[in-house]
Length: 293
Ligand code: GUN
Image (cartoon, rainbow, N blue to C red; front, side, top):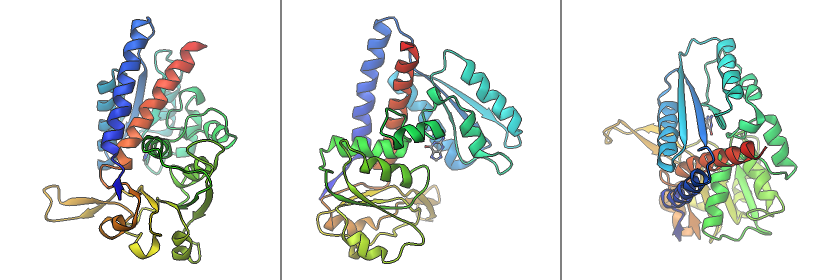
């Protein structure tokens, strides 16, 4: 069994990006610029956004963090997005989700300029991805592809089982693993809360992507010997033994499943760090595309 080390792979992606930014600057081009909007003060969102901003600094990107009160009106949030859309120096825009209930996430996503949609959530980005056109892929699925590629894992003709069908992870990774490219060319089964015989389906999988958000859901008796297991779960569970009072649990019962796998991602330190690397890659691509025009 080999651990897919997200910290190591994301660092390699970041080292590569830092060099690319230096090359951009040497050729007289502007540095990539990511603008992030954080509404309210949800603990997990604070952590994610801080990490995204810090990573921008590490690779030499410019970043702008715009904080808005949880009570901000949808209209004022949309106005801020429009200002960023019109700001020529900004290459990528992300609005951290979830948003307060009085704001429509779909309207917000639709308002971000498709050429700055580094989260890959805009319907134009999703449509392009589905059609196999160059597109911004959502960060988590893109991070998974980068990790599979780094470890040179064969995907052609493999049966991939994706557990979960969210717009952010399950659905896009099912599309990407099925595309006619590497990593891809899998036969993909997408399972969800209404799936019958989930265990039997998982036992047929060469690759399992667990993205349902239920701590330690995937047990050893659901995994075929030699399978590749990718754990997207990051649930905070109370743990009095930790200083913070909580522990982060994945969707995979790592201790028992790891023994059966050829490759497995740990939590934390697996897919999580890769999502940031993927976001940075998208921002770099957005900068190149916008400045070529
Ligand atoms: N919330 C959870 N994941 C994400 C993500 O990838 N992007 C944004 N904007 N919000 C999120």
